[in-house]
Image 1 (spheres, rainbow, N blue to C red):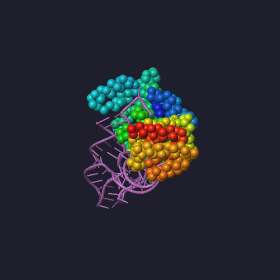
Image 2 (cartoon, helix red, strand yellow; image 1 turned 60 degrees about the horizontal axis):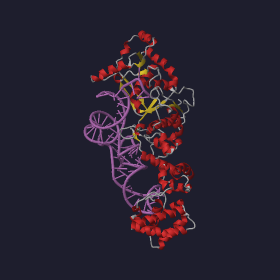
Image 3 (cartoon, rainbow, N blue to C red; image 1 turned 180 degrees about the horizontal axis):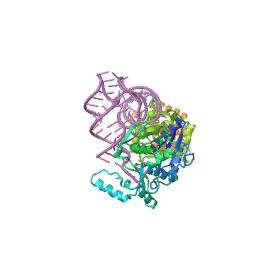
Image 4 (cartoon, rainbow, N blue to C red; image 1 turned 90 degrees about the horizontal axis):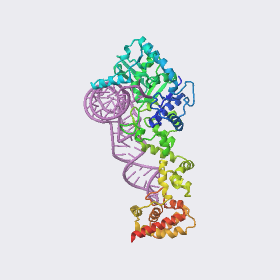
Length: 485
RNA sequence: GGCUCCAUGGUCAAGCGGUUAAGACGUCGCCCUCUCAAGGCGAAAUCAGGGGUUCGAUUCCCCUUGGAGCUACCA
């Protein structure tokens, strides 16, 4: 049997990370089994559809490296792959169910339904559709349908017994039929609901394995009833636990949680995000934690899936990102970092290559880069207290001495290379019976204005160049003098 | 409320009847060091509670508690 899987999002906005993970696992499972990965757009709820969302799904999936073999924009033998483009094929299947008694037309208006629902809840009763229209004779029902009266088609759930299915992850799941409602299969607008469309399309598209969120777990027994009514074989189901933002809430755009696109825009590396997402709710069973897409395809295993929800932990993502960045070549890093350097340093003539070397292992997420390097463009205002550092054995008095000593040495330096700077400043410390740090710390503070910087005094002095370095030293001396008076 | 599902450190998690209960992130400490990173070493921290079953439960069963999902002409 050739494996065919599908990712079937609704175009209601951006691709959230839970959706991305579902797509990833679905893709991995198909590829690992030499199968076919399909994209299907579930747009039967026309009211919720968001403009441009379909294109965003195509784009996100491509950016994520999850290329589908069949789909709306790539074609395939089982199209169309957009449900609204399949609208006419659902009703005949529904009518087949009406004929066999597994479904029936219903003419109750939404208003009437709402009244009965309200009445029931007012009395503290459970509301379920009362099968009111099931009592209509087939002839009358048919006549009213043909007369143009609005109708829906409902699934006729048995009053007794249990519906069940076997989930590859959760095992046997069953629900008593009398707790199940007669759901609408075909809406008044002629389009199918998810409840119906997923069954019809998965069957028609030859889907062998369905991976989807656990929100469908409790209604899957109902879908199985449909498969039975048709005499079709149901696919293997693998329900996936949700990705949470904390113990009680799912990740959601409403609370400002980032989408995949957002993460990329913030300067997360694609492969780091994929690697992190793969491990959220899945474990390879050994201690590996770095995976390329190909390695994931090989390693993925249903047994490693977790049944419990997983909380999206940004700190670990940041760590992964930092790791992926560290493993880049310097050239790759420089290429990625340049726009972020430009954001703070454009036109300043800074040696980006040297800066890249310094920033390479210090970059966690690229959007933090501009703030880290901006001091090279402009000396930030700083408080004199940062000249004091017990471990370096410096305070503002020593700092003033150090800067006064360093000033002429730096000015006289013909070669402003890091080696020359280091040699000169260390020699200066030695000559004056000072510790290296007692020179280096004040110099670094004076030229950077920051308590911590990516790189030491000599590296920063080199990046700044002689004129700017001297200007900042003078500023530091002036500040310290002013404070002494 | 009803139905379904879930439950190992702060987080991701290994474990699948007998273990000193892995590993990673994060946290803390030490080393290195011209700051910060990086790197090296080390530490603290988990089986939700109660009943069973068993010679023996993190592991199997039940209950409680906590959480999630479904309960729409949304998916």
